[in-house]
Amino acid sequence: MQILRLMVTLIAANLFAHSAVCHATSPNVIVILADDQGWGDLSRSGNVNLSTPHIDSLARHGASFENFYVGAVCAPTRAELLTGRYHSRSGVRGVSTGQERMDAGEVTIADLLKDAGYQTAAFGKWHNGTQYPYHPNARGFDEFIGFCSGHWGHYFDPFLEHNTRPIRGEGYLTNYLVDQAIEFLRDNKGRPTFVYLPLNIPHSPMQVPDEWYAKFADAPLKLRGTEAKRESLSHTRAALAMCENIDANVGRLLASLDELGMVDSTVVVYFSDNGPNGHRWNGGMKGIKGSVDEGGVRSPCFIRYPSAIRAKTEVRSIAGAIDLLPTLCELTGATVRSKGPLDGRSLVPLLTKGDTHEWPERTIFSHWGGRVSARTDRYRLDNNGKLFDMVADPSQSHDIAADKPEFASDLVEQVATFRREVVNSYPGKPRPFDIGAAGSPRTWLPARDGVGHGNIKRSSRHPNCSYFTNWITTDDYVSWNVRVHEPGRYRVTLYHSCAEKNTGCELTLKCGNATASCVVTEPNDPPDYGDAQDRDGRTESLVKDFAPLDFGQIELAEGDASLELRADKIPGDAAVEVRLLVLEMTKSE
Image (cartoon, rainbow, N blue to C red):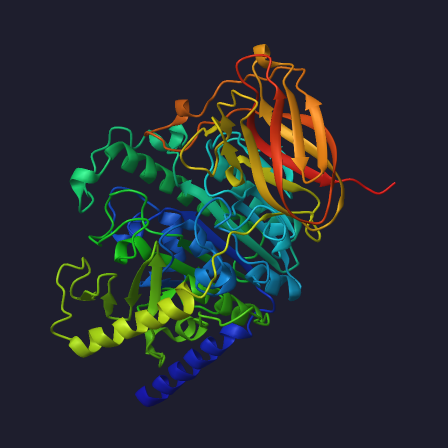
């Protein structure tokens, strides 16, 4: 009788595992990506400083990857998720001024799911390119609401875009983004949908509504970072409050799936893009955001799909963001295509059989800022060639390279190959910013992508959400290195501010032999704002309500050029402050 029961159990398990790729036809897919949330920023990880029951439930009702690795900072992880390839292969070299862009030829998970008949949408922080062909609408997403930059300066009623049109969000940004995702799911019920939800928190500025912050405002923290002297308690409290806001929003999203009857037919993925953005509790691991040590690149990752994944499945084999594209393709039946070598592998066998599945040994590499580390299931070789047993020594305290010289030597050789074939394979030449690329309804050229000349300064040392100011002489100017794909006439809108005493300023936009001119006749002198909502000091720029100014039209020739914004006359003590240029090709007569 016991043998018979065992046989029945094994048959049932095999049938359940087989259902992973065939139970549901075209399941919906939701990928939730937190921004700067560390592995330790969840109650499931053992953090008693906060409570995240809804995120934790994804692990309880699905699978948890206990050793999941992402990039050291934001843009690389997004590129690896979208392409299944290490970020250097796709041209991502930085987080701003164009270095965050994935090469135009890359194939994204949205492209593949769209080819498979999915309705696709992204709501949140894109951070892989602003202009077509890098914009999310050009990378497989039918719908986009959010911001393309690496961070935003204000999270309440923010200035955003909807498919390249400027809009104003309503309320707290994270709540608003989840509202859009829920509405999209409702509008497309009955059709396979892919929702990519790259949230904006707990990335700074550390802004969170009173409702969430009140619990943490004066709360003692039972768990502290391993470098307690470097921990900012105000920053940690704000980050924890933001994480609880994420959790509540995940709860709302999951409740909407239940309401719509879509729980069993929806794959939900949750993870973060790098380690914590501060020295707070993170399980004793070494490193934070920006580091290629364990604490900088280890992320929580949960995948819930009741039709195919058993509840409480725990996977200890290493995995990473590069694996999500092939995994989602196998779960949905989408065909995998790639511009070049695919670095990820489908995790479906681990999702359906757990660590009992015979899984080939592998090494996952982390690199950023010229530093590379390598992780196997048990060991990490750090950027300095030190070897650590991550099972016995998760804090990376004891170098065992001398005790295991052959193993250390093998990983050193693997890292050298990775540097040669991946990190150094991209030529890294500066790329112009594209205007009028195929399919582009309009092109945004933010101050982030421009260069200020003369006295002109950025409003912050971080370009992402900055604007140009201190334009005090006619020798000063702003330029963008551009490539015009489609020649013709473009209508130009300048988002600017101008004090009343500086009205009458005469501006010229020049590109090659083409020019367009306008006079600033109306003042727009709004105050900087944003810091009133900060829970901790900021490095991001404050924001303003910049006004659109119709600059008229300019005739652009095809090819590479410098697009220059100049002031021919400055009646007062300054010209204008510049946030953004928007160019829209006019229809032929």
